[in-house]
Amino acid sequence: MALAIAASLQVVPAASAEAAVSDASASQKLSFRGMTLTIPAAWKVTYERGYHRQWVSVDTAACHRRQITCPGFDLVGPKIIKGGDDIHIESYRRDRAWEPGTSVSSCRFGRDMNTGERFLRAKPVTQGLRKVGRGHRAEYREWAGECYSMATGKRTRRFTQRLWYLPKTQILIADGWNNPSLARILERATWR
Image (cartoon, rainbow, N blue to C red):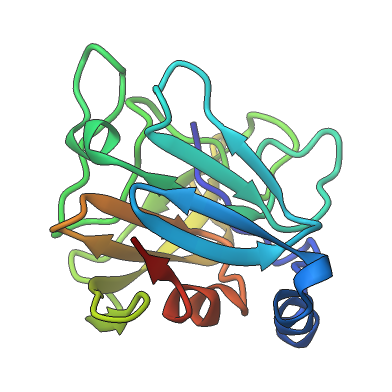
């Protein structure tokens, strides 16, 4: 499963998303492992099958029917973070970008299997702590990635993967589409 990021597709603009979140009738609540996010009602929430509510994907914009992945972000819990052969997922490690698939990931912008993704830098572009609701700080990292032609190996596109990791609550939030409103939504998260 590839995480998503798309420059060619329209992601909900920050102003529109914030307006939707502030209007209770145009928003929905998404609860995950004690954290509740208020997100636009138009965003589609999917609990990934076979992962026992350990993986939630949120599509934040419409997607071409042939698109391999849709613009959005993922919330994953401890079983996915840990990874392993039984679930065919690579574990999350703080010292590298998160690539959950155990094989070559197709380019998130692609409509076919002719392009792959890779992360070239050994260090994150940005790192630090970020607020995720009151009293919770996430380890935040941005990783530079690129899509490349499987035939030539040449870069076809660039993207940024943003990761918020909450070690105490065992939540990883992965945004490969650089959604402009996600950081603000996470700052406003509530906890039980």
